[in-house]
Length: 209
Image 1 (cartoon, rainbow, N blue to C red):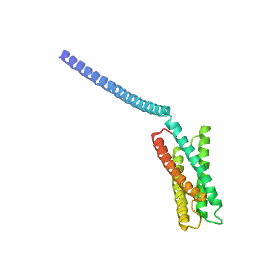
Image 2: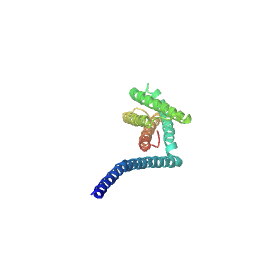
Image 3: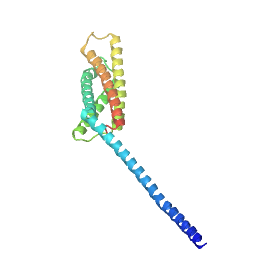
Image 4: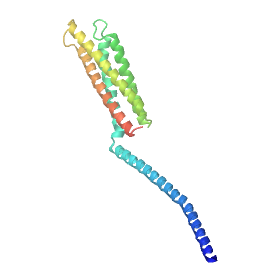
């Protein structure tokens, strides 16, 4: 009797000890699982950053992300200078014989001079390593595309209207200047459109700030 009772108490103590050991070891397992999850998450985050950095380094090493937008700004600056030079003579000799309307002259000078200044400021910022935000550059490129397209349409409309009047000697130099200004303005609008697409794509990929 005594031995059986002692054995039962001993079994009871052993079962309680096993339960306590299980309860003690279970938080350690959950802690290990949490640590492993955190380690895996941090490893994945580090791998994503490394992959993004490698892509950025590879893209910058090709030179396109660094030099493509300034190249467009150089072309846009050249277009603005050429347009101002072409439209100057017809605009200042329309008092006796109208080649271009005053509203078109105002729109043309405002558009060409404003975006000439923008191109110069952008390139100067690149020289001193001060970058424009890509969203601001995209907005200005979109505005440039719209204004250049509107200016080209107005210039070519005035050229066509003046040509149909037939009250000046044919093949005059000023009319050629006017047609050239409208054509170059169309090219400038295409440059701004391509610049807009490139800037948005590079900005969305994180290649430019």
